[in-house]
Length: 201
Image (cartoon, rainbow, N blue to C red):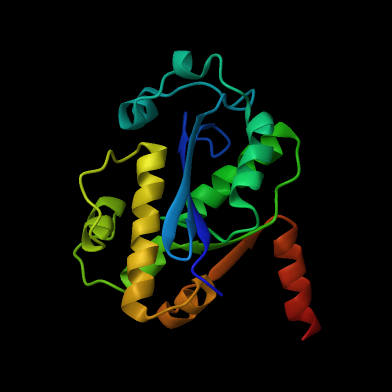
């Protein structure tokens, strides 16, 4: 299998995981970036207040998403963009939590995805004082990007995975996970399927 995946990054309006206000997507096929996507999103009702702290970090305000589509309208496009890829995110627990919480808050089913955390991969690939995204991305040769812009962060995440795969001579995402001792996670129906498979062994 080739090195195919979709890197993803979310920004949120406040401390609620459901308060998604932007997403960046970078599609990698055979180790090469082939597509990019970025959307502003109106957070689900009840999670749509913009906290000053969050706005200070990513620069997005309520006025910026006033005319944006809501999460339930964006999700089909996100699923179509990824097209069955593994998702990759830096500190993936946060981003998968946002995806899941936004779906739950919107009353829609969480889509099924397998995912890999580039933070875990970076820790087993580089020797750094910090493994924050800008530092790990620099180690992968990706620098001078607008941190906390969702698309720029997704591009940085993609660069880490591509570089790490080269360093470890990994042909695909599962092999990279195995070589770095990183966990392949799952959300949505894939989670239940994986648990039943483990129990059936």
